[in-house]
Each structure stands twice: as C-alpha cells, then as structure tokens.
Length: 81
Image: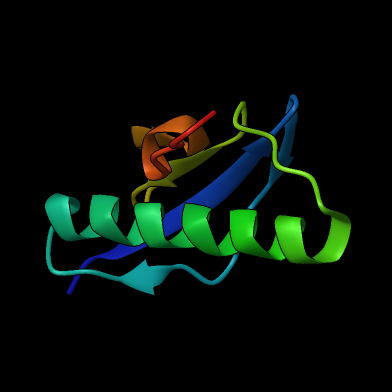
C-alpha cells in the first residue's frame, strides 16, 4: 500500500509529517487528510479556544511530491455564523 505524508501548513509555517500513513490510493489519502485537519482543529479549539481556517493539510507521496491540499475551511461546515 502506498505511503502518503500529511504536512500541516499553518500561517506560512510547515509541520512536516515524518512518519506518513499508508492509504490504498489518493482518494483515501484525501479522506485521511480531512480527518487529520479535523483532529488538529478540534485540538486547537479544546486547548486554545481558537480556530484558524487558513491552515491546510498538504498531501505528498513517498518521493515528497505534492499531490493535493485540504484547506481547513473545506474540512468543516460552519452554521449559524
């Protein structure tokens, strides 16, 4: 199974994923990126009471080639804002 890396882009800073995660294909990797984004957002809300929708999860392959980006603003639906 291919290994994908899920790097966190935050206000111009990059937190590189050094471990990676095996996914069957790019579509599954994109779904995993949404999960990672939501986990980070939940942690930020719980720990700091803040949420930056300008962040993103960038997915790279095992050769460190950029494949896609999942902006945090696409990972949640805001209602009654």
